[in-house]
Image (cartoon, rainbow, N blue to C red; front, side, top):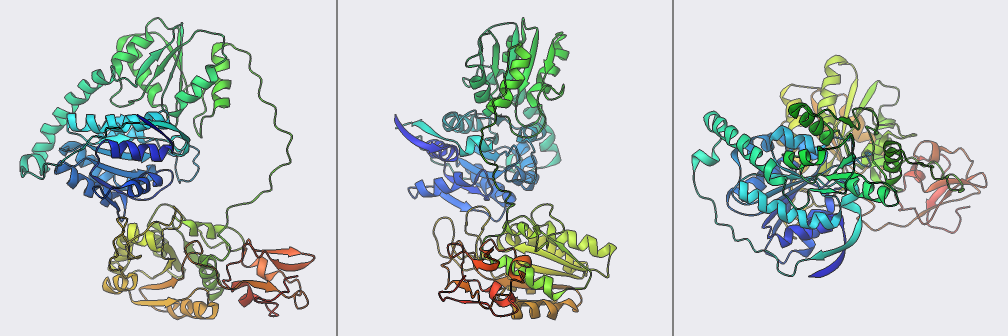
Length: 600
């Protein structure tokens, strides 16, 4: 047994490696991204690892590998499971041969997501087992268990870490004898691998019987537990279990605690044992009242008269993250203990700093060019998921809608059908284009829609940590491959006109936008310039204070964090400047120039 200091995502990755995983697929998304990246880094060459173009593709590649007896891991964040839900629902009926674990990392808060959706519901909806780790150490062990259960019962399983589990760092005890899995290969069997209505019906019957059995099995699973004794009970699971334990550390009272590590199928036998002799129960969980509803159902099913408190009764917050302090407050009220809110630290308030595009970001220049090109005209700017969503901030104010990945193209089409005289722009990043944008473009071409697609190509998946994608020419296995050309794709599907421009050349960029606004059909502009985080900065710019007239145009129109006011003159912070030159191009008196010793 060896011990290593790991982030939760690293612990999950190492657990998968030590479980003998053969194939790993995924799509980057916080808080899950580091799982696949860790496996790629620790790969001894025997594991196949890929960033797939989206979560649906990842799940289907993983399914094929699992059909062939491989142990397969598929990683994504909670909204990615929506994308993968089509194959997921059918795969639940078909089943697998090799162990298959689908990691869907939930994001209470939400900290970096569009939603606070709870993956445990997907387990109930798809009838798949769900594992819910309470700590990074437990996640390391639990994912190995998940592979074992998956193979034993021939089913994919869902693994649901939350942000605090994914990103916490702790010492983890790791096995010295990893499991080695040797896939048998694909064996033809149409009754098993081809999904027909009759087969699905028969499999549905088997699934219901299996889940009934798993409920009993999970009642004896070592990570589900009842702790303590008393007439009041606390039911919890996931990271909330750690909060409860911390909150109870100094509580002078006896209380019975139910820890649920497998919320579906629910361990009914264990829960019934927990409920016996209790006067009331409070449920502490993130995000939805999943455990709470299961306990209420059990009480009703078995005629148990017992008060269950939680989110449904409004005794526990029904949105956002739990914390040790929030749990302490709830439990103090429930247990009748004195509680004193911690006094706020006497520190000066932090400055209000909304999220903005990085200094030198080419997306700022792209948005600005479009804004200048259509000034005075009625235009709607549909945005998408990525760092360019930050184009909604003032002073750019260039993202009017943002729904989900790939929806920029299709939202723009819907608006056009209601307001055909409006110029509809759809902004999408290069990685998102490959992930989910192409279908929308085909739809627009097929239905003869007047929209302008703006592809913001910065040659990386910037928002989630600069992962490769089909346009970068490199795979996660390190292979150099042919780049998939966005322009060729657009022309091949019938886009009327495609124009390429460097967004850092404002005149060229503005002219590119103007050249397509009057063209009918689907038009596209590809603004290509690398992300500042993957390229070296060019020579920096500075302000000549003698020339500066303090018009503040460089600040009011661009919102670059590198440009500030100092002594009533514009000033460029040298540590932030990447030399994009946009501020120089908008300055009406040429007070901003490359290099020099001026700058105030």
